[in-house]
Picture: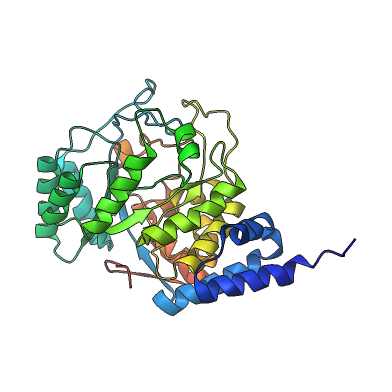
Length: 354
């Protein structure tokens, strides 16, 4: 029987190959994921170097405004799913949103993310008026939307109104896995159609997926990179799956920070210029999620600007972090966290660098 080759040299060879070519075969990604304990430090070292070459040690902040927890969808993993009768619903109206933007601008934010469930109240007319007001009041700012699946014409109207970016996680690149996470009324094909429409319309487009979601395999994770490479999004948001007590997945094990961080490092080498956040979900399961995320190659953080009276109601998952450095009020604390680890939070739109 031939002796097995040491893992570390093999992993280093693949990481070097990924850094040089920005892509690997699926089997090669799977090998790295399965043997990540042998090479995580080397991956993170390379991910930091690639990130620093493009963006330096700058951290871009986005003011997150969660405008509604009403949603027509019934995703099996999500706490604001329409079938959850225990949640206290809320909705922010135009003046609420504009007030949050004004407050955030004064703190130092120059990108605002309007995120919410698929709430029928927010017609194109309503959203275009809000986007127009934000742009008129703060022309030096970027507006990012994260409001789910819409038609091409709807995305076009919002883009023409001034929206700069759109975040829409695909959640998984495996169609069969997608069906296990969503009801029959939702389709993988439509989610992909939306992402392609957004790219075609010139949005800085964000995709993303959960790490450790129910029924996910290492093969599923390895398959994410071909999907991302083909789409070429300007942003990728990933985070560990965290169960919500009022969903069908309430008893499912959560994803880990360790695997999420490794996937972040792989994404940075696969898409060297991507805007890559250290997400709230990562900070929820890892008290040093921001710092560890930066160590793995991220360069974006999204503190919460949602009015405090509503913030705790946007419960996508249990124990969602929304205070301290995860809140806009904690920006001073966040700046100090980043300074201690050698990074600088900058005031600016923080656009994608091609």
